[in-house]
Image 1 (cartoon, rainbow, N blue to C red):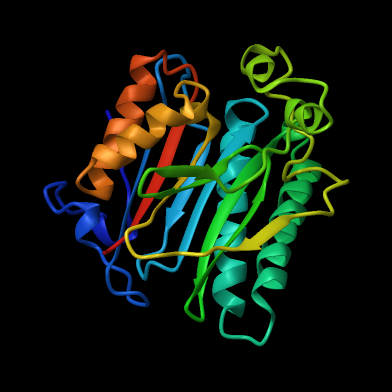
Image 2: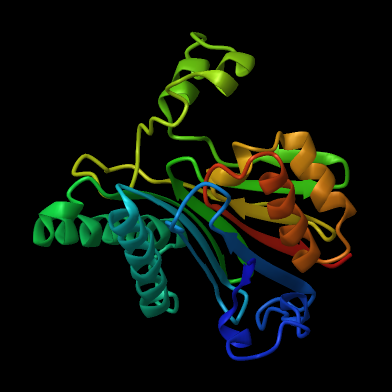
Length: 267
């Protein structure tokens, strides 16, 4: 079963779709999120969050066994959410706030590892989009991604923190080689590691009509960018976009957990 989630929609029927939720801070912004265990996993180690106000969006993809992966992704999501909520009205610059929230999540995951040695190998990726003072920002660690669709242009805004992405930047691997490389899942950076000191952050340039997509690699492992773009372009609503994306990923194999959050900015 596909599990739709929104804090505003808990205990309500699904005929009241997520697309009917509009941002309190930015009228005309609609959004929806969806997560699915896929076809081959027994548990969903992804976590995600949609702020009811439409100002905070998080996708995290856990690793380290069923219990460890679930704990890492949920702990990171909850820590980031609480940290940003506690400080969003402060004078802390937004890039610093985003970075500190992910580093706080890293500290929380490391502390849990020490308390639970059976989860010592757990970790998680994370991608966060924040609306603050009228501007959108993104921060990420790992290979969960943020995409932007503007008319016919579809761009990956985040850079994967993986061994193969580094090799491609250095000219050692081509884009085609990356797709089938046995090390394509090896992360160079993730939450839950003592050596995590850098978080990638950037200000987003948003125009009316844009769509954003946050997703875990369960989506991008199954669908090429052009297929993802086609789903976003053809979907009339954010809800139909995430439903069609996850259905398409499952049709291609659904080998991992799949999570997607879509945002649409009215024309």
